[in-house]
Length: 451
Ligand code: SAH
Ligand code: SF4
Ligand code: F3S
Image (cartoon, rainbow, N blue to C red; front, side, top):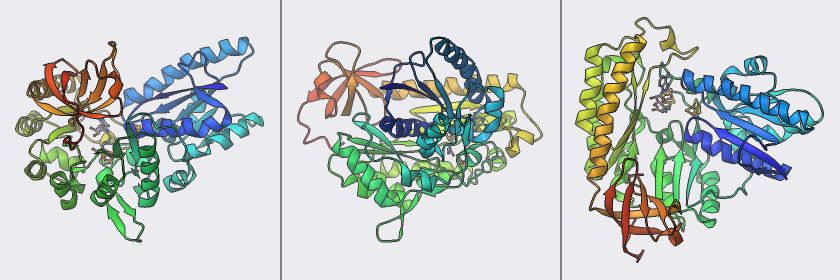
C-alpha cells in the first residue's frame, strides 16, 4: 500500500472534500498515513478566505519540497498536490512559486484526481484542473467510503451567489448549486448503515438549499431535514453555514417541531452596524437579525447561537464597532468566531477607501473577543447541574473515558463511557472546564432521550 497524507485547512466543506479525496484514491492503493514524512502523496486542501490562511500554504510547500528531495535521495518518490480554494484562486501561480508541486486541483475538480495521477505517471509533468462545475463532481464521487465515526458531514450545497464585498468564496467555489435530494438520501442512508447517528449538512449557504426532489419539485432545506430525520439510525441533525437572509419560515418552524434538529444555530452577523452591513452587501439590517433570532428562539427557547464577525471592515468607525458590541450583548452567543478584515485580491472591499489601520483592527478584535469569551464562559457555566443527551464519538485520553457532544456542540467527557461510542445517553454536567464539560451518566436507558 502507498501512503497518503492530507492536510486540511479552512472550513468543514474542506474536511468533507478531504475525506472524499481519500475515498477516491483508496482504489489506487493509497491508504491514510500519519504524516508527510512517510507519505507517497501529500495533498494540501487549502483555504483562501484570509491572507494568513493562503500564505501558510506556501510555507508548508517549502517544507514539503525538502521532504520530497530527501525522499528522492533515498530513491523514493513523493507527489505533492494542492487542492481547495487556493488552488482555484491561484492556479498556475502555485506551480510558478513552487515547482515541486505536481498537481493543482480546484474544489470542483477533485473527482478527476485519479485521471490526473495517471497523466503524471505517463510523464506529462505538472497537471492543473480548476474548471469543472460542482454538479459533475458529485455525480462522479465514489459511494463506498468509510464512515468517519458516529458524527458525519454531508455536503448538500456548494458555492455562493451572494458576493459579500469582502469574500472570495463566490470566486473559489463558483455559483450556488444544490445536490438533488435522492443523491443526498442515498449518501445519508449509507452513512447511517455504517453507524452514523448525527449528520451535519454542509453548504457555504446551506439554508439557501433548493435541490430537486424525487417528485421533480424543488425542496427547501427544512423539507430535506424532515426527510433525513426519517432515516433509521439518524438521531441528530445539524446544518452550517446559514445566511440570515435565507432563514425561511419552514426552517424556523422546524426548530419547534423536529426533535432531531439540534438546538444550535450558526448564524453569521459579521457586523452590527447597518452602514457596514450595507457596504458588505449582506442585504439585511441589524434589526432584521435581532428579529430573526427572536423568532427562532420563540420556537426553541434553549437555542444556542454561534456567529462570525469581521472587525475593521473598510470605513468601520468607532460607532459602527460599538453597534457590533451592542448586538453581541443583546443576542448573547454560546460560541463565535471573529476575524480582522483581510483584504482579498479581486474582491470589491479590498479596493475600497477607508481601510482601517492594523492597530485599530487589533484593538477592536481584542475587545470583541473578550466579550465573546465571557459569553461563552457564562453559557458553559450555565450548563453545570443540567442533564442533556450526549452522543459519544470517541474514547477520551483517560482510561475508560468517553467523549461526546452535547446538543450545543460542547465536548463532554464522561468516565466509564468508553464502551458507549455511537450511543446517545443522558449525562449530568458536574464540572465546567475551559474548553469542555465533564459529567456523569444519569440514566442508561436510551428510550426516553429524544435527542
Ligand atoms: N457563507 C458564510 C461565511 C463563509 S466564510 C456566511 O455568509 O456567513 C467564513 C467566515 O470568514 C465569514 O463568515 C467571515 O466572518 C470570515 N471572512 C470571510 N472573508 C473574510 C475576509 N476577507 N476577512 C476576514 N474575515 C473574512
Ligand atoms: Fe462569502 Fe457572503 Fe457567500 Fe458567505 S454569503 S460565502 S460571506 S459571499
Ligand atoms: Fe476557505 Fe474555501 Fe472554505 S476559502 S473557508 S476553504 S470555502
